[in-house]
Length: 93
Image 1 (cartoon, rainbow, N blue to C red):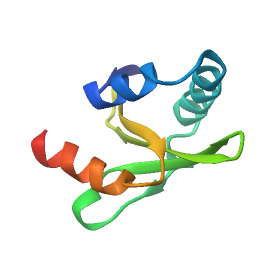
Image 2: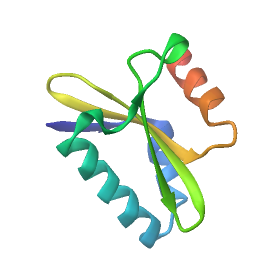
Image 3: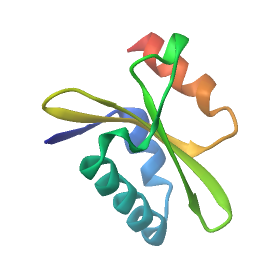
């Protein structure tokens, strides 16, 4: 399966340290193994799945979309303003 990353996802990952990136990579592998691991959203975010995980004590969210051939990593980060930012990204394409 091909993995593509949005610019927003890439920018947020750059801010993570190496240990945080390793944890994120583990969760991306989990999604590849079981695409239904995340919760499918409704309304403005239909077709978007969000997988929740912790890095130390902070809960992170990872938004993604899956088609037959690819996994699109949309955004990752802590909960604050997360859904607002995902909606803005989807609206602007």
